[in-house]
Length: 260
Ligand code: COA
Image 1: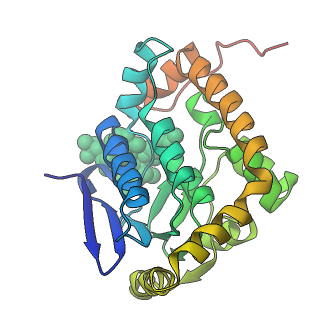
Image 2 (image 1 turned 45 degrees about the vertical axis):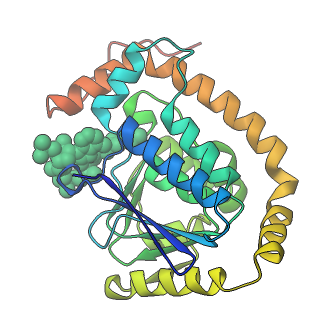
C-alpha cells in the first residue's frame, strides 16, 4: 500500500499520509516520498499550491519510533530523511496549507511551523514529547514556538511535553483556525485553491519576503538543534524511551544522572 498519496488537480498538489494502522507514523521512506513530492511541486510550473493532510482521523503520530532506533544505530553522518523533508518543505516556494485532524505528534506538530496556513479540526491533539523520548526539540521548534507563542507557553509545550488542544495551538501560533472536523478538508482545500488561482510570481515573491527576515537565524538554529537531537538519539535516555514504547511500559529515567 502506498503510504504517501500524491495527487494533482487543477494546480493543487495534495500530499496525503496513508498509514492508518500506525496512526500515520513516519518512516524514512515516507519522509523521502514527501520530500520528493515537495521538490517536484517546487519545480513543476503546473503546481501552484500544496495541501498536506492525514485525513480526518489522524494527521501523524510523528516519527516512527522503531525508525528512531534504526537511525540511532546509524553513523552520525548519514543524512536524516526527516531533516531532508523539512529542508524541502522550507524551500518550497509555493504556498503550503496543512489540514490537521486527530493526533499531530512530534514532527507532526513541528512541521506545521513551516507551512503557510494550518487548519485544525476540533478533534486535533498536538504534542511535542521530545524530552519524554530522551530527545530535544527539532524542526526549529525551540526557536519558533517561543517566538510565536512566548517563552512560558513554549516551556510548557516543550519541557513538559503534554498533549494540547487546538485552542492552545492557536495561542502558540501553530494554527490559523480551528474548524469542525467535517469542515476541515473543505476549509483547507478552499484556501489552497484560492492560493493556487493567484498570480504565481507575485505569490512566490510574497512568500519569500514574508519569510526572509528570520531565515538565516532559523537555519543556524536548526543546524544546532539537529546536532543535539542526533547526539541524544544515540544516547541511553532515548534507548530507554524507545524500549519502553516498544514494550508498552512506562520508561524509567531514574538511573540517569542530571547533567551538571
Ligand atoms: N511509531 C511507531 N508506531 C506507532 C507510532 C509511532 N510514532 N504511533 C503509533 N504507533 C502504532 C502503535 O504502536 C500501534 O501499533 P500496534 O497496533 O501494532 O500495537 C498503532 O500505531 C496504533 O497506536 P495506538 O497507540 O494503539 O493508538 P492510540 O490512539 O491509543 O494512541 C498515540 C495514539 C499517537 C497517542 C500513541 O500511539 C503514541 O503516543 N504514539 C507515539 C507518538 C510518539 O512518541 N511519536 C514520536 C514523536 S517525536
